Image (cartoon, rainbow, N blue to C red; front, side, top):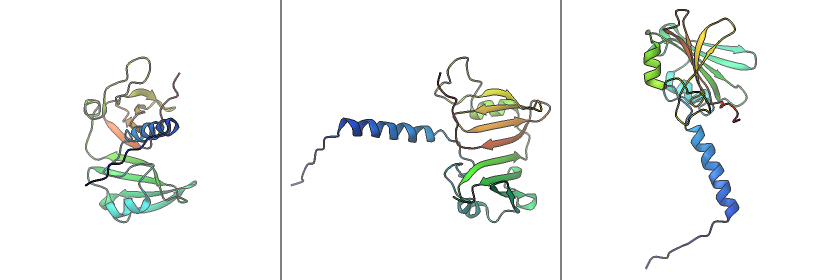
Length: 169
């Protein structure tokens, strides 16, 4: 005979569980690159996956693990993992693709432009321009920014980091 257990969840705990679930589900939108998740993966994870970097550089309060030249990660000319030396957590990944990638491929892979108004639940980009007039697509739900070459058509680099969603109005 099997015992049957029933539990009653306090309403406050339900709310806490719901908030916890919402936080986890929003983190699920974060875009990993080759199995490395900005904000979660560590320096050790990067080295385990890709081997020792070509160079390790200190930049401000960050450590940069750079893979370039003969040690460039397949499909790239260079990849940089920006790590917080205190925690060892990867905060950002900058990827410089080897093959030419165009806007159509980006939209097919990550999503089209966001419609006017509030940000939808599905991934979409906001077209932005840097101070030096470089066009880039920002995918807030994915934590992804894609910078284009001066031709405005082919990709120069990808930046992966934890999502930073715009404040709701």
